[in-house]
Image 1: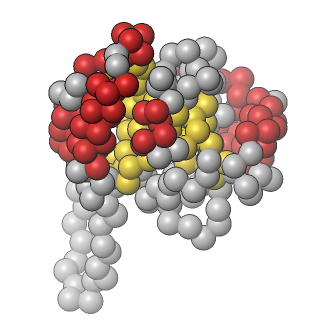
Image 2 (image 1 turned 30 degrees about the horizontal axis):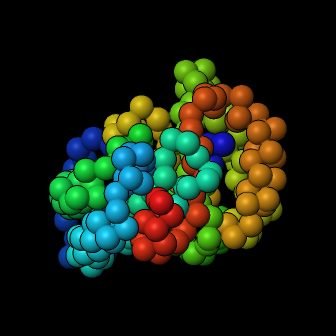
Length: 251
């Protein structure tokens, strides 16, 4: 599914000597964002607690979570009934890796946090070539949380992909790009993960209608680029809900 925009960044070059000019234009630096999808699974022991203990532990957990709302774009998703690997997902978007680690540690230190395991935790970063599927939008920042459903897909290419020329790869990506444009009700976020994880990209599909995502996935599977995508990586189906609703769904 390796979607991205066809807009290319200029290649980095070595040291160049240029003449000084007082009229040289100033280009503001683009602030990249760190993007994190953390998946949590609750222990069966949680459901054996008394309702009073659960309520107390959930309030404590929500209090810690809410302290970081000014530091991140924060979205909570329930996976209960959709997946056996995870019950809960947090989508965090910000400019500090330290705060990602700090918030996670604080959540684990709560009473409810002691009942959580982390089956998957994905980290990526935005770049100018991020494809959102909407013309004219800011391509350097994630505009998130606009739909009820979020399908999270880590993407890794086979070695043969990198043996092709850049023009051949661009042609295949262009075809995927055009397929995505036929589904304007699906917002597609592509962020770059290579260096943080084994996979190259994290692709997130936001939509209010899951059937539309299935139709898009079926079309993308028929494109030439899909032949170079490794199979077997998890695709998570997530339903956006308030944190209170997500925690209540744990049982």
